[in-house]
Length: 85
Image 1 (cartoon, helix red, strand yellow):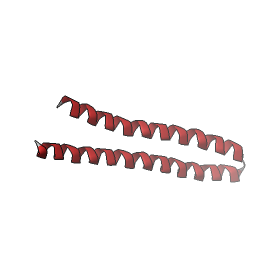
Image 2 (tube, rainbow, N blue to C red):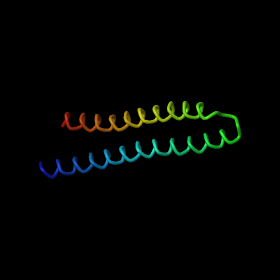
Image 3 (cartoon, rainbow, N blue to C red):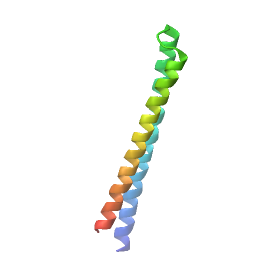
Image 4 (cartoon, helix red, strand yellow):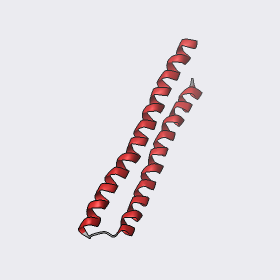
């Protein structure tokens, strides 16, 4: 019984760690891409600084909420698996 609990815990930790890593990576990737695109558009005169900041805030907020939901979903799935067994 303890061996099964250990294996389940290790699998759960791996899934949780991967979820957290992907979630953090998505946030930083979105921010980096937006900073780059915003800088290019500001230099070309197509966007103002205020417009770039508005877009940055909206997209980063959306990606952050999405990644947190993804991490929560993995935790919830693990909880339901443990509850069923």
